[in-house]
Amino acid sequence: MSTQFQLMTEQRFRPFFFTQFLGAFNDNVFKTSLITLVAFHAVSLTTIDGGTLATVLPGLFILPFFLFSATAGQLADKFEKSQIIRYVKVFEIGIMLFASAGFFLHNIELLAAALFMMGMHSTIFGPVKYSYLPQHLKETELIGGNGMVEMGSFVAILLGQVLGAWLAIQNSHEIITSIAIIAIAALGYWTSRGVPNSPAAAPNLKINWNPITETYRNVKFIWQHQTIWLAIVAISWFWFYGATLLAQFPNFAKNVLYGDESLFILLLSIFSLGIGIGSLMCEKLSKGKVEIGLVVFGAIGLTLFGIDLYWSGTSVHESLNNKYLLDYMAFVSIHHDMHGNIIFTYWRLLADIALIGFFGGLYIVPLYALIQTRSEKSHQSRIIAANNIFNALFMVISAAFSIWMFKQGYNIPELFLTTAILNALVIIYLCIRQPEYLKTFVAWMKP
Image 1 (cartoon, rainbow, N blue to C red):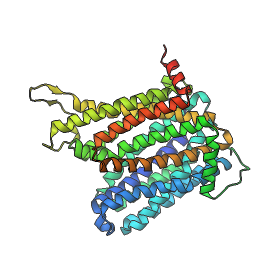
Image 2 (image 1 turned 135 degrees about the vertical axis):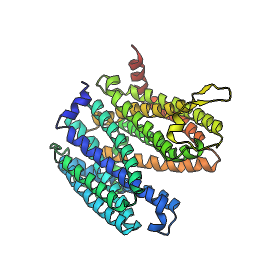
Image 3 (image 1 turned 180 degrees about the vertical axis):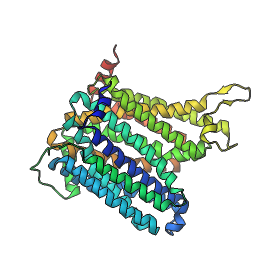
Image 4 (image 1 turned 135 degrees about the horizontal axis):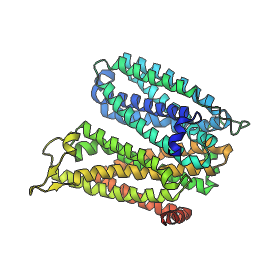
């Protein structure tokens, strides 16, 4: 049995895995349910139009990462981590009770406040999440452990979005959504009680409550450690790439592929499963060590299949010519051209999305393991917190970049193509600044 699956039988990993899984799951059940309600029933909630709300609400979730990450990193370094995890889970139960009141009262202000607080919940949990692993796993287990966590996170996101959308369209959505989110939060607290003691890395740390000066201090510290700095830039770039794709999947399915909601769910499912499989494969491909050569391999796949997604997406769009609306079953069925030949472009497009996810998993897991093994133990959580700030910043830049591209007259496949080309430039820059990436990739490729 692979080491990473053996971890699921051990107390040092299993309760932590399910706690973080349920947290990500509940995040997405609540967020998706709220956004779906706004999309279809905005009139019952507010006079603000649904389109504006759908843009503002995700921003409310991201905002706490800028406001509280610096403080969260200090707390995770100063205090024992399992206790922080349990406090965060109690906080989540309170948020879900607050959100339930919003659902029953049809009060958008309460729901928006709950969404902001869920962003706080994720902000506080993030530094603990990645600094916990190196405390309880051997260095040879870090790739496998991170792979399991990344796989679990993306599966949780997928399942949470599907369940959240389904709950929002039910007749009695207020009661069943409330029961679901409170139950998931309570289950998360129950699993957190099994998380073992994780001693503080810097118990004598004096907390700086000013997020601006503390963020500046963290960035200055990381800049002095260029290996970690470049790893954070590479991770944040992945979130730029992923956010660009995921944000456009609904309109890509509807306006480019002429599909319905089920096709969007299929694209999301394939992408998430691709990342999950890629994350799990990291341990086997790296033979249990922190193999940063996989970062280059993953980046090559992200570029190649991102470019091919442009070609396959454009081809499918032109072949359909807005003749009919496809559900997911019609999309994956056999299609023929005017001469009776089978058209493989539809399956090729799905393969592109799956492989982008797969290579994304290979790309991201070694980078997190690199930070965990090379950062100073006393600063680990603060480094992860700074990474979270950069991730949030790059996702905001991703949204602004997409808007700018569309204003220039480019379409969604062209946005994907541009992002894939930029990805190639980023990995070239990374290899120039840190030749270790290219050297280890060449060594890894040799038989």
